[in-house]
Amino acid sequence: MTTLAPSAQWLLPSEAYWSPEWFAAEQQRVFARCWNLVGTLDDLCDATTICGVIAGRSVAVRIEDGVLIARSGREPVMVDVWAGYVFVHLDPSVATPLAQWLGEFPDLIGGFRPDRLIEVARHRFELPANWKFFVENHVDVYHLWYLHERSLGAYDHHRARWQEVGPHWVFYEPARADVDTRDERFWRGLRPIEGVGEDRWGSGAHLIFPNVTLATGAGFFMTYQCVPVAPDRSVVDIRVRAEEGSDASDMLAMSREIIEREDGAACAALQDAVSSPWFQVGPLAVEHERPITCFHRSILRAMA
Image (cartoon, rainbow, N blue to C red; front, side):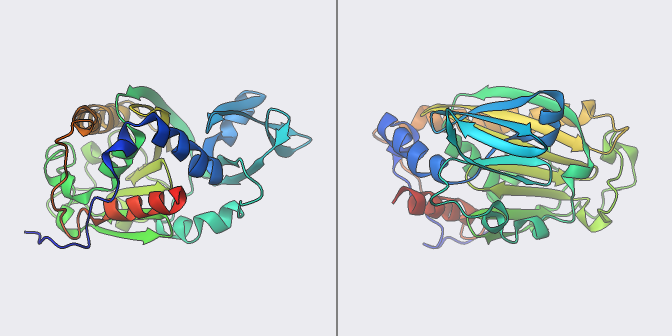
């Protein structure tokens, strides 16, 4: 059972999910003023340049004389790397170093070193919903019992723990006691990751603010960044890293079932409803839905 308390509240107005004016302001006040994931160092090995669009501005990252260089048009922008992931910041006047931006986050996700792994699967899909609905769904612990009753039924939701790390978020829940973590079916074709203990073979779910959602588990490290395209439309980019020799076909199929079909359908339903003049959100579960409130506060601080 959960109790209801005012500490968990829905803080954003409905227009935050459909208004073009809010979307434009959000691009400039949130995305243009924080670190944004644009790719991996592996991408630069396969191509000369990583190209992307952040807050309406084209960004290109490449290696020149062994040094990472990032530009938006002719303007230089900041670029840095964490664990093989390449991040860009459009505004050097307000940017803190990436390591300072992440804070304790890398130390709290369970000893995973994705830079030592290889990419074994990738899948993109279009989400007919605002990007914040996707993030809110990701950090909502309460929905694990219901939306993912079967797809994530191997994990002990009652033992889940989460915490804020600045504007970021970390989460972990172990496998259920009756689940045999040595069974091949539990590993889904993946190999154990060197340096990650059995205490992290459960389900990890994390957020690098504002829109980089991550998942970790027995044999994999996955990002599924939700990139805003329009007020009511986003693109989700799923990238799975694992030990060499892993077969990721089963893992990718499971990820698509959870992220694209189950989570995606929930987000699309909210998008259909949010523009209604009768749309409203009732009380939130004090603990299991409080991460949504924490995310909203981070958004509002940036928008202010």
